[in-house]
Image (cartoon, rainbow over all chains, first blue to last red; front, top):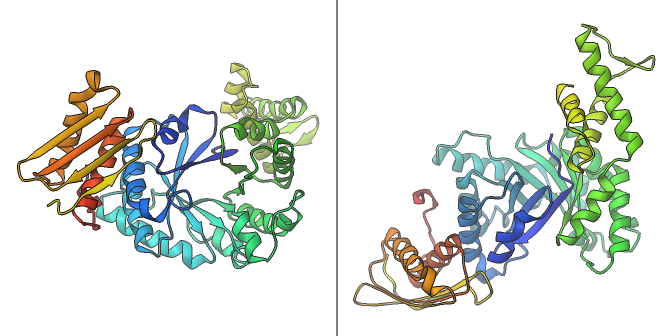
Length: 301
Length: 97
């Protein structure tokens, strides 16, 4: 299980921002070859991202590269460069149907074979940014075992349903719920859209609280200042952490005693409770809330 | 690869390098302007020459304005500039190390 609370977009043609990308506390980095790069600089950004992936130490962060439309020659060249490095997840731009995912996966497979890379090792993330994409969210989420997550792209989506973003985000509720159910059904992560108004911290935090409550795994972000605000919302409270610790202690104790059924305070602990406890402890650990002993218990469970 | 026209890649932003490549008759000639020339001038020249030779470029006039770019940035900008100057857009990613 990997945390994807914050996925920081970094323009693919900016050496200083790429160099500094890993010094922050974000969970994942998305090097952007698409919207952040002008059409005249696609070649230079591709060379730069390729070289950066080969040379820079992004520490333990997950790194993805948002490529251009893989149906275009530019997008195909992006794929050739990024897949060859074996160091990044492919983040697709606008996906509207399962064929979009399958066609890109087929190109990736071809590149893997050409470069002696084990087929299937290159993972993918998809973005859903249109009405048709939202309606097809389920088939997109199930389209390839390479998929790690699906994300909402709100700006294009709002344009496609003939509206614009509002302060309370009510226009996004249907899309968010559709994408979330699809991701959960497929067992992959679900990431929310960016929030572009960097001066509006209150609005940003409110939006993060909304998507956290809906069940999202994290949010795409465009500035390091947004990282801590997201992580604060995603950090579980003490009572929740203690409850999760009690669950994992019960699991370890039951295992030590050779018991097949695990119970806590007289109630049987079933699989969903265990999964929720694991995620809570993962979030707590990332926030530095667990002692070494607690971490060891969580690991044993 | 033959340099057939003048081409530029990179910017004058901090941590970047602007590399201009022009046709030349007598090998690879580099003019370097860098804030860190005393410490890293030779290393920057070597990186550019090696990158060009890997691409099969044997003749080029290269003007470099460095703003403290990392080695990987210098390689990337050199490749971009060379490909643009060779009017070539079918880069063979499979051949790269």
